[in-house]
Image 1 (cartoon, helix red, strand yellow):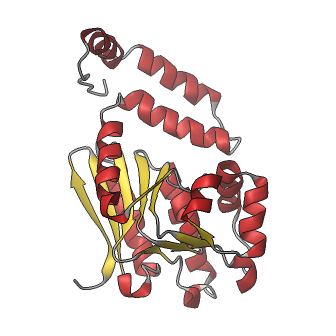
Image 2 (tube, helix red, strand yellow):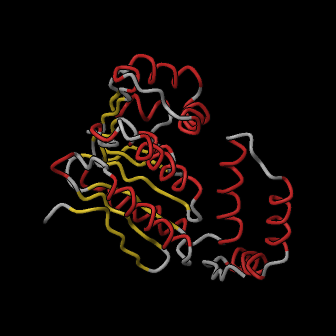
Length: 250
């Protein structure tokens, strides 16, 4: 299978973006960033509830092409794509199928869930390269992993294995490689069965709280919208009848 920019596949309420440069450890260049941004835009305008992100081959992603760092506009494009992923409408799952390095560590942290395999390895070489990381990336590390762990990752440039990544919260779960797709599919189906209004609203507001950027009026508007929705009544009926609810997002 030829190498190419990331591809998007949509099945019902679940979408999957696959990084397609396994010979380069799924390193991201300008074309890849443009494709990622375009795919996220497509998903944002759809009724997709869950977006999966994974890589082809034995690595998840090795970050941005180091040869492009001299071009400041391209570095900004990487930041923008990672922020776009965090801010996107659906709930996101990083299916981490192997190594995750450099800026790709932030790409994974931008996702709501990170399911890795036992062979997962991660390191952030920014200080070793003379690179100062950007604001929201630093904020994601601190808010998700804590200040002490963020300092250890950024300042020592150590490599961390799956057990350490699970313990510090970088990985939400760790599974055997041969069941990764099955577990991600199961979690996706579970999430896609939730009521869309609170599912997507709470994802957005929780991320805002982590950045100290909560918009209280927007939160209250979503609380009101959920309270007035037909899905709330459907959820109560399904609970009483011990059946799976049929949510419409209305």
